[in-house]
Length: 162
Image (cartoon, rainbow, N blue to C red; front, side, top):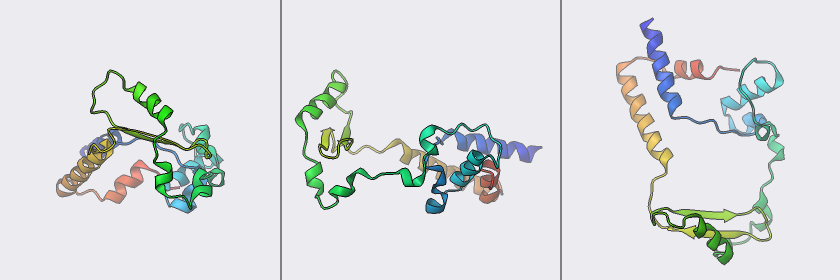
């Protein structure tokens, strides 16, 4: 019983630092991401699950269209010239807020009119996920020292093998 509680606590802690992000379900062969194979089996009905698969995740890998393919010969400088109206729109989002907020936006929704805006773009902030990864590495290092659980068994418990 005590061993099961360790597994459950470990899974709850690990789950607190994760979010579901979706790739096309049929992308398993291209990426090797086991979760995609699992979702593929759920979608096909081979596995039962309460997982709700959003419509965007149900698209095929072949439905992905890379907008900038036609612009691959252009230099990045062509994309990174500030669009004045877009810059005003972005600045309006931060009106009255602290100057430390930073953002860089490249709008490629219209390939013939790529728009770029920036705000405090050279500030050296660490993305939140980097810190989470450091915490997870430390956590698993300590768990490995004190709890002799093979990582593979935890992974297989958390994500069922298809």
